Amino acid sequence: MESPSKVISVKLSDGTNVKVEATLIGDAQNVMPSAYRKITSQTLPFNEATAGIESLSKDIAETLQKLKPDKASVKFGVEIGVESGKLTAVLAKGTQNANLEITLEWNQ
Image (cartoon, rainbow, N blue to C red; front, side, top):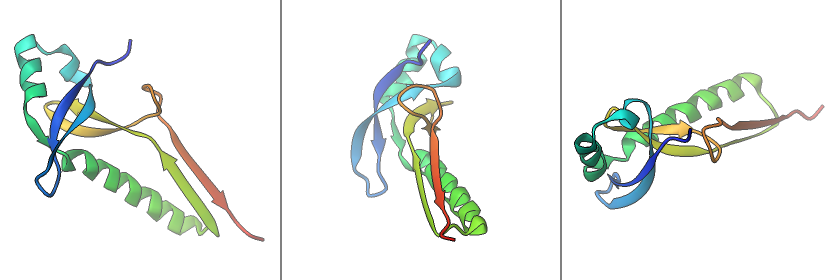
């Protein structure tokens, strides 16, 4: 079964509010209707999700520095999720299937 999603308001680092579609994950899927309204009516800081993207990118970059390829590309899809009332980045491709594509090349 696919997780439900809802359009919610998030605040960017410059204070701008934008709407994003967020997937309700974990305990957020099983909340009572009043708690569900609270989750979807509050404005959440977007950096809760971008912190995960930053950390993932740093970990990948450190691994690539160890491998020292001549050329590398990394591609990943990220969905925004709400879990325990906080935004989170969900590594995904369209559905709940995780997707991380890494291409490494060495010139010999």
